[in-house]
Image (cartoon, rainbow, N blue to C red; front, top):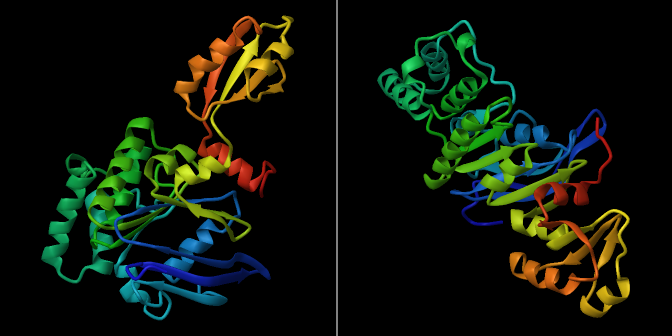
Length: 310
């Protein structure tokens, strides 16, 4: 575990209803980094969030947040955590300003500082001009931005984001991603739970992949994608046309068939594409060509399987 780690789990197990929801999990998070939390439904992502915030006590093992026990030192720990839950839990009949004042009363003792922070947060999430409007009139993206702003009120060192762009349009999603990158640049630790692989790929420095409460992998997005296979060129032949396999075997180091497609390893990506097309010329009547790089979707399915989860 790193000496600068702000979140540390050491051999943590959490049993709920006689079933381990987190099973022997160890990992740590450092400041100024974004951690993606991925896993199928029921993998233990929400349970992990609840352990970090102190809502759950581990059945065994230890959890430390900024060196503190999040259960025993709950008040101190929660002052340092900004949480954006999957359900925004805003009061729709209240304005953004009133929602933030209500939240500030729970965490900020200095009223003058609270008002200053509220103004700063409204500017941060681009809602200053709608501050007095009822939140019930907001779009989904505006509500998520307000929830993010609420999480920032106490100027936390740690942000826990559970599906931060759920129900948000493309423009709003990229705006929220910009906020996350800004928080990282300020030295905060951000843990993002998401089912959107593109989101994890765009934001995360490292990814914790959970399944059945266990750590399947903990590494960079590129490292996870590399496990899903190499970059390949897929050449689709014209339906009903003849493929000269003997010629291909003499020209290519290796290839395979996938239906009417010929699959050739291309570790060099685009640099290999022209070479491969030149080698297959005359041996295949080409209908289409695709350069396919492994994605986080590929890695996720390869490491957790394709069966549906309840």
